[in-house]
Length: 240
Ligand code: SF4
Image (cartoon, rainbow, N blue to C red; front, top):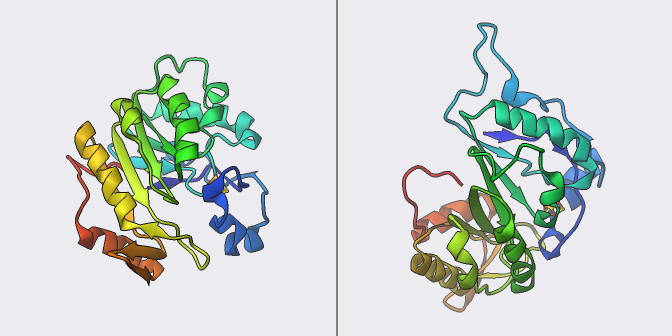
C-alpha cells in the first residue's frame, strides 16, 4: 500500500541522476514542482460505515515518488506526522535520501521515535554511506533499514549494521542505468549475515553483471530475476 501525500522532487545525490522524475513523469507533471496531493489524507479516509479505508495491520510505504523530508513539505509534514500518530495500527515505511534533514523535520512529541514508523536511509555508494549512516544511527529512531538503491558500487556497511534491522538492495532502472554487479550484492549479503539482520535483493536493475557477463534486463524481469537468484534472507512477514 502506497501513500503519496505530496509529489515532486529534485536531485540531491548520485542515485538521483536517472530518477524517473527527470524522465516521463517530469514531462507530464512538471519537473521539480513539489505539490500536496489529493490523497494527502488517505490514512484517515473512512468508509460510509465509519471504518478506515486502509485496514489495520497494513504496511504503508510513503513518499516513494518524492522525499518525505524535502524542505518544500515542511509545513505539510506536521499534519502527515499527526496522521501517522493517529494510525498506530499501520506500519509506515519512510525511505529518504535526505536523512540529514531528519532532526529538523520531527514533530515535538517524537521522543525516542514512534513505534509504527520504520525509517529507511538510502545509500548508493561508499561516500554517501559514510556520510549518511553515522547521522542515521545517531538519531532517535525505533526501527531502521538501509536501502542500497540504486546500488552504484561496492559497499562496506559492516561497521554500521549494529543498529540496523534490515538491508534492501536494488540496481538502477532505466535506459541510461549504470551497472550493478552481483559481486557487490553478494558482499552486502555476507555483511548482513554476519550482522544477523535480514537482507532483500529486490531488483537487479537494468544493467546487471554476473559471472563477468553484463546483461540488459527488462524492467518487468528485474524483480523476478532477483527472486530467482534466491539469496534474500527474510524472516517473518515481508515489511520492506
Ligand atoms: S530523492 Fe528520490 S525522488 Fe527525489 S530526485 Fe532523488 S531519486 Fe528522485
